Length: 416
Image (cartoon, rainbow, N blue to C red; front, side, top):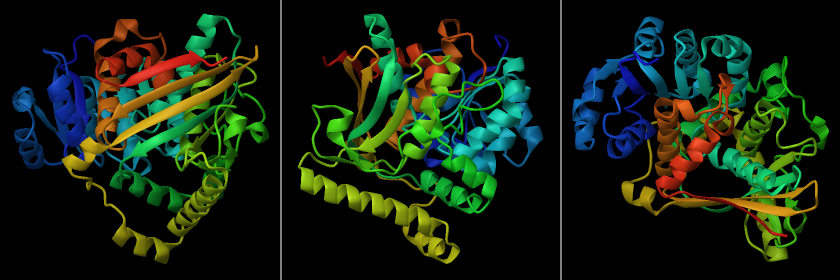
């Protein structure tokens, strides 16, 4: 792709997260990186570009619409990487994906939708592999910290010669930030799709993204941890106390991590089981009560989103697509995730990933941008993989270096 006009095209640049991504790239992309902004309205793109830092002043504008395959083909043929924030992806993503695969262009997105990734695998996997396209889903808070948390453990344990991963749990240790309007909109679409029996089966399958023709099946589905269970923290690691609450994005993130293991030829091991939870305090009684409330609240919310009249009421209260918190709130956000495992040799390990900035907005814009830059500028350092990939499998080592260089803390250590 050395003859492509652009390194990266940000598609959906006028969306809330799209604009944050463009701003980050304007500030942090290496000099000489060729970037363009794409969306439906040239006027809105021009207005948005005017507000970006100076390096973006000369970035070309591309008019492209998810409902116009010809405009998408013209866009994807001009760039090495398409960086798309146009969701919900089940609603708007398939045409963009088809165009990207057809042109052999690399791709990153922010999807947190299991059915969309499954569609991507089934409909475009073979063609993407044949055309040499790297299609990397879920390059934001969903699911980079989850994916790299397990990958960091794998790298450290392998280097130490301590076998492979066993029972592994990612804990959201601290989190300050809002839920994006885009995430809520994705939930709306999935809730509607869940009325179909086939979609429900996909959503409930813990190996929905890691089993298919020629893919590693892993352990039995029934052996995987529940996405909605409260967890005794001491069973995750003896250093922990209290009860862990369900993490509402576990039903997506866990599937991405399992897919990474499949793409890496079961590198995490035959005993690898993976779950996610959320820290709500170490006091046994208090944390149990809070965890129960979180579990009940999550179940009620997801149930309410599937009921049309109730969903209509929630729509008036929840963030809309394109809405987001103020810069002050985004700057005050942060997150820390910790991933624990016990290896097949009996050793305990922990990885930790932390960053400043609202996880769903500022930090997500950083992660998405650095994934795009990895594909565009570090091609010679990446694994020789193509097809429907994950952040860890496609760009793991390069992404760790890039995120570390811009202030993220990523580490793994042996506990015993």
